Length: 299
Image (tube, rainbow, N blue to C red):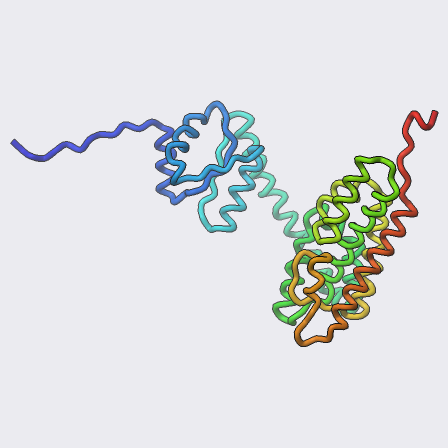
């Protein structure tokens, strides 16, 4: 009799086959939102959780975007999971958004970058002035990222950036100041709390909370932030203030205006420009803002 043993046959189901295929492709991270039709796959993923990490998103479209960003950042395969029906439809929406809006955003961002570079070639002071005034609108659409790349390129090639980051500094400080002025003037306790908290984060360099929570809701704040940002940007642009190391433009990154081969006056001028943006925006916001009149008060 032969001593050859017949290899043991292992029967696996379709869900396990899916997981094995993912492992063969080198997938170690999966983004998804579970649903009825794919619960068996989630059961199989649970058994292999030491090999494949699952990241739960709050929406199928978010899983599609997360998988795309993961693939771009790591060079690995980006995988997203969702159930059939509306779940699969939401995945398609995420892909369609990337395919349709992605190129449009790239075109707009490239055009903004070209315009900024062209203006800087003959009127360097004008660029930080415009950025100080218009940055809230650019952040609303996400096209401000085109400016960041220009600022980084300036520091890599010239050793400093004299028009992107100074303008952004003025705008961020101005947005925070406008919100802080509103928080002092309003009698609405909830608005006072939100505006003060978001105003502090804005002057430190993070403006998205104040932009979407306050600036976009109250036109007086948008006007104040634009005026203050423009004035502060003009001051720094006219005096050639230089940024040397980037960071999120705000009070916490003011030391990035200190250069080893440049006088401390550059840092002092950056501080002065930020102060000007703050004072102008605060004053305009405080003067213009008025609490909405309630229906009961009108009668």
